[in-house]
Image (cartoon, rainbow, N blue to C red):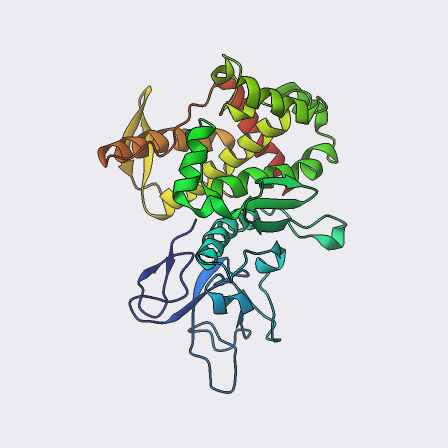
Length: 349
């Protein structure tokens, strides 16, 4: 994630902000600039905004969901009831008449929009209906099973409850469970048909991940009944990845998005670990010459930045009494799978 600043007062602002807390300027996400922009005050007779300092720029309007405080993405359509590109992907939202669901929806939208930001930076089409593709669609439903089916990502609203999420994390013996992790994982299932099956990459996929034609339901039932194989850490990023090749792909896809965005954020914040000699150093230093992690960076350069970054941040987390920032080890077979994801993404571009 890039670093954003209010152009009116130069204060640092964040991806989810609708207001600069220093100068009280209105803010919004402008997809054409891929940036949080500062907005000039609207006139009483006009619902639109202009980007501060750009009087000739096109008029921009708030998504109608902004009235609920769940969306800061801007549109060029000022018609009443217009949704942002991100909010148009919603098929089902939480029942707002139920206590706590408005905040739950905000949390879900924050995770979803961070996913979409990454997909936009990677030029991965998620709503290209003109090309005959199924758009990425979201159902935010209480007491449901989080998963993906035919282009629809369902996330259980109860996952927004930190206590419930921790209970499930422990129940399934997971080292990590977040809303953003769910969104990234399920998006991997969404992209598999277009990037692997229809793109003619099935054979290479099967050499790395296994044969996805094995019975999916039976594989998941076996995993939940018997647990992962004893040697799963030698071949997979997570225990769940060992359940079926599709889950291995989705887990690897999610970790690739974690890697790319965390590296981008670290370098935007002005620090990044550097390798030292034959061992990884945990010294943080400014790295201004690295290729864009979302751009033309090689997988080797990503991994060279990712490994020391996770070691440094794990150490920092422990010093504050928290669990590891990245509680995973990347075995060689998983490294090859991550490299495959990187090649698939870069070739798609």
